[in-house]
Image (cartoon, rainbow, N blue to C red):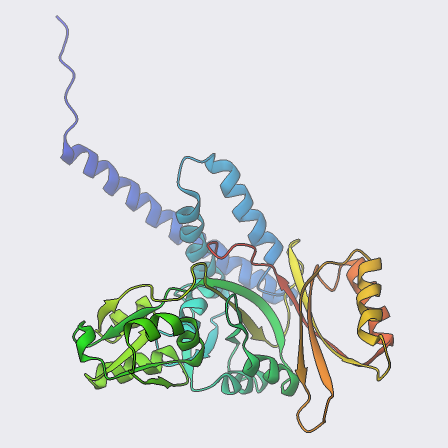
Length: 366
């Protein structure tokens, strides 16, 4: 007589999931313990806590081992949070950002460092540079350029005044939400936001809220707070701001162009070691002679060094004199990059390596 196989029930499957979750938790605890042990060993050997190459190898191994069974982006997001939490257990870090809470800069910080870091809001980009330069915070995160509106000049100008190093970059896809207390567009008498989001939503505002004045403020978080305090004010703000300040969405995604992405830089006291996929940023002053910039570009081209960006900024107090910001692919410790930079240094009136740091290739990846 054959025995009938017992049918799997919903309770059975849920019990299996609970057992898997418990195993996950035990393994996470074990991973955290291992990370702390590594931190202790690195402290004894006076080695840097962060090893970008090791982290990149972990992600590559996981993607290969996954074999496309688990969705790749969620997989990377999960392990990014695990890895950053374990790394920060070795040494707690404090991160300053353009506040108040729930700005896009805050979101970029969380994307880069995870939720385990301590976040401190600042009132201006200049304040972030000051805190890092004086050693009162471990890292700062600042916007440097937007795919639509271009460079954030207050950040570039701060690099000219403060001695800090670039430690990393993060790209954040930006979607702008129009929010207020009621969720009703008829209640809006003023639209507040940072100048960049206002510019990125200029055509939408002109078409849908003609005659309604805009008010530039120092951050999207500050605009969201204003909207929470005043029923006549609407803000252009992030998803996080909606939850933080308990606002209602009037319209989602009001940016004029799709694919809107902002690049942020992580600043600190020292750049990390090579990851194998890196970028180096330079700040250059040119000799006062014809073809000076062309000569620099020719040197880099001869070394097969790829440029990712070049931007000029006037030197305050000096008429018609400029400094140039250059991003090139590769780490300063790479032989070719170092040789190229040293040749460039010889023909510059001013030369500074702002930092070498892991490249963020894709806005959707962590």
